[in-house]
Length: 74
Length: 252
Image 1 (spheres, rainbow over the protein chains, first blue to last red):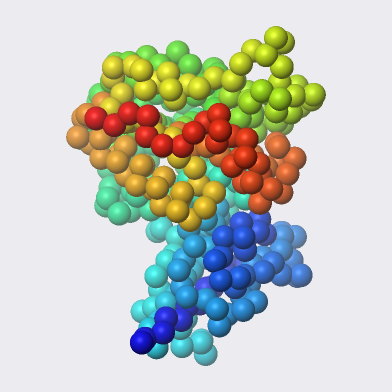
Image 2 (spheres, each protein chain N blue to C red; image 1 turned 60 degrees about the vertical axis):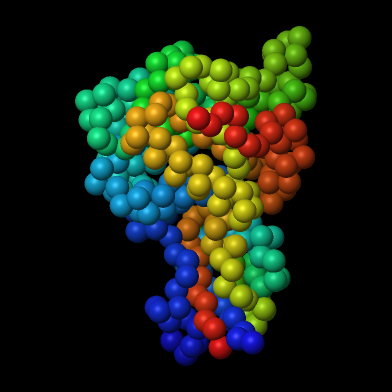
């Protein structure tokens, strides 16, 4: 069976660190960074990239439209 | 680009091109941003970027014209449905929508809203209900829940002093002119998809001349509520949804 792998790219300059994507991810992929962007906000990143399926839940709930979602069948 | 997944041909989700690259001024986690994003997505899907005229409110969303790249008119406080009436009557083939908060639609603009809906103007009204006046510092709104704290009712709203919260969407469903009245939210991926379908339907109704469509989005104001965005979403589920139940109120 083909496996689906996903990945996201966060626009870290646009992200405000609201944490909603982290709680919306069904596969526990995302976390908030310890570093901050130039506005002083933390931003989300993939802590467990192998779990990502590209379901785009994070992108759908992002209030600032800063998540790009990629998906690949391997 | 070493990651084989992150390639242009594998892109499955990105913000709409109708949404500008300006960073929104909203607080982190604000529902306004999510609704702006899906309004832009719907306009892009319909291919109507050049055929859409929005009417901006007074409130936090006053700068919506900086974020959604379509034509906008800025109305006086609460008068968006009146301005939209004129725009739609003069441009009947255009998609005309208003985007209003609860202070704009349910307080100062109550008369304009109710009469535009009762006349059945062919506009779509997007109503963001967060139960508080967000822009001015979290004062009590007509939609503030009983017992809910705000800066002007710091011990919670009491009915004998402050009256009762207003379900204006239910009132609008009673008017003859509305064709589609629904209440949605944007706190989870599935609710975002439902709201997007509702906005699409409202926009289609506007173009088909079926009457006024009202999409209420029960939203959070985490700054005004003094919570984190995630706590605010949970609080909304536990407290707002019992009083403002989600679902279609009218569809014809």
